[in-house]
Each structure stands twice: as structure tokens, then as C-alpha cells.
Image (cartoon, rainbow, N blue to C red; front, top):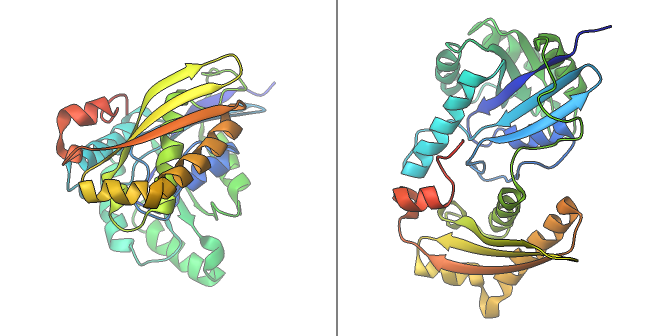
Amino acid sequence: MEDFRSGFIAITGRPNVGKSTLLNRLTGEKLAIVSSKPQTTRNQIRGVLTRDGFQAVFIDTPGIHEPKTKLGGLMVKSAEAALGEVDIVIYMTEADLKNFDADAGIITRIARASATLFLVLNKADKVPKPDVLTVIDRYGALHSFAEIVPVSALTGENADELLAAIKNHLPTGPRYFPDDYLTDRPERFVAAEIIREKILLYLQDEIPHGTAVEITSFKQKKNMIEIGATIVCEKESHKGIIIGKQGGLLKKIGGSARTEIENLLGARVFLETWVKVKKNWRDDDFTLRTLGYGKNG
């Protein structure tokens, strides 16, 4: 009988390279919010995949970047902390050479970790195959990666090949979680992230990065879950934009989020949202702690 394999895999890289999309693709569930805007993921998000013969615990980390706020600093610390506690590190970038120099510096840093290092080249379906081979050669000269896998996180191209490589490199180990377990994040966290995703979707420019979501109440009633959520923003003018004309945009954000939360939790949801201004919250230690940043990833 084949030994059961298990372990922890960190997905890391610069902002906006598709890390959350890859997590959702590999686990088959929407565990991390996705947006075209960079620095969407602010916390480590763990997703668990159990299949015949192995269990992979994926950790989607915030993008590694030069922080400009305390929040940004916490995000980078969260990403780097994940590297010291995993069996495999997946460094993800796009299947071209436009960010090669930036990637080279990061790869040099993370290669010091004791974990097995993979390189995953995303959006490979958008690049001619000969060009992908050139990219593989250039990155392969930087470091002796255990695996280099071109994928499309969006379409799933080569996702099964990546999973097979992950299984091969996982050590023999126990089931850390039950077979039907998907994430270690509580329902409150998931609800807040879905609301934040809708803010990213419906608002433009710098406003979404100056917002956070705090779940102020989460009550399981007999036939419904009642959720109270406060959207925190940095400026009074931003509050007006988030609320929209006659409250229209806030209703749109709340309605879209409620539908997705209902689908995820499999229950009816009553969602009530408010907006409050907290100037410079991204540099305020107390507010960052209140919103859950800097705790357990």
C-alpha cells in the first residue's frame, strides 16, 4: 500500500500574478477573493485538498512588494513568515520576462528557506510555446528549482500536472485535517473577504486599497444567518462614493456579497452594511489589530 503523503505549500510571488486564482483552481473551491487590482490578498489564506494518497495544505500569501504603510509591512511579513513553516514553496510569476529582474531578487531571498522550491509560470496559454521555453531557461539559470511548471490558473491548463508534482515532493505524513475540510478560516473571515472583493469589483482607482471590512455581528438564527458588517475607509469623500447616490452602490455591494455568502455557506443570509471613516487606519496599530491584521498571518 502506498504511503500517505501530506504537507504544507506556500504560494508566493509579487502582487497580482494569480496566486489566489491558483489556490482556488487547485482546491476546486473559491477560498480566496480574486481581483485584477494588486495586493488583493492581505492575510495568509489556507486551503486544504485531500485526494487519494495525499493531503496538500495550501497557503495563499500576500504579494511581496515594497510596503508604503504599516498594513503593507504586515502583508509582506505574513508572506515571508509562511516560507519558514512549509514543505514546498511555489514561487509564481507570469510566463514572460518582463519582471525577471524583480523576480530574481525575490527568488534569491526565498531560496534560503529549507523548503523545496517550485517555479510556476502563469498565463502560459497566452505565450507562444517557444517563448515559454526561453523563459524556463532564463529562470532555470537563476536557481535549481525542484520543478518548473507553466500553467494557466484561469483555465486550469497543467493544473493536474502541478498537483502530481506537488504530491511527488510531499513527505510521508498524517492527515492534518478531515477529508472534507476546505479551509481553516472562520466563516466571519470568509464573509468579510467576499464583501471586500465586491468593493474591489465595483470601485475604481485608489479607494479599494483604503478600505477594510469588519464583521461586527454574526448570528446563526433558526432559518437564517444575520451578519452585520462595517466598511472602514480613510476619507469622508470616499464614504460618499462607497455609499453612492441614494445608497445605490452600497446596496449593490451588499446584494452581490450576500448572494455569494449564501452560496458558500448554504444558508439564507441577512446582510446589513455600514460605512465609517477612520483616517490613516492603514498606519494605526490599534485599528490594524482590531481588523485582524498581524494576527496568525
